Image (tube, rainbow, N blue to C red):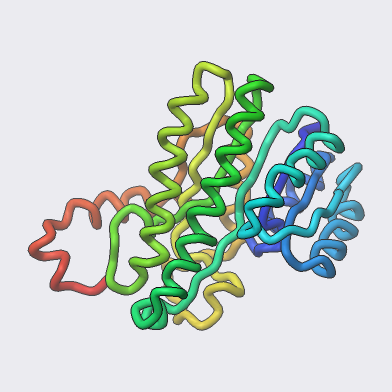
Length: 245
């Protein structure tokens, strides 16, 4: 039985991943903003097989609450085996271009709140000297594109931070897993036109579970996105700035 902390637990990807962990009998500590959704999720996961599923209501942008939340998680779970950070937002790129405040809010939610949590977690796991910290970043962070560069910039920051954290924590026996989904059909992307590159949350969560169990460093999901992003990153800037992807 694994002891697992999930942040952003009511997001579509986190919920689908939590169901797998519940079905195999893992103990869960769930953190999200919406208390009603959180309670419903905890009940559902217990029905699915989780021996325990504790809910904790918190907005990740309230940095002052991070430490007390982690105190509670460690108090209930004891040593934590796996952390999954899965919260985030996806505001309109065009609206961000018109608003400094909205742009800064997107960076705060998708990057700074994640980095704050990772800093707390790294220090605690370094003392624990075991465990896996997994973070959902995005293929959008691999190269800035006109269509989503605010969101992509935040994810690029997360990817760079987890890369450095992985190197720092290696000698402590702590693994850091960077998860890079491509296009996923979730409520957050409901207004987007869907095509053949789009995946359902259920189709990628097995990859997340396996990556955490195997302590992979970085994983693209679905896996074909690794090849797609290699090609995109190789396009020269003089050509890339003229096209829309």
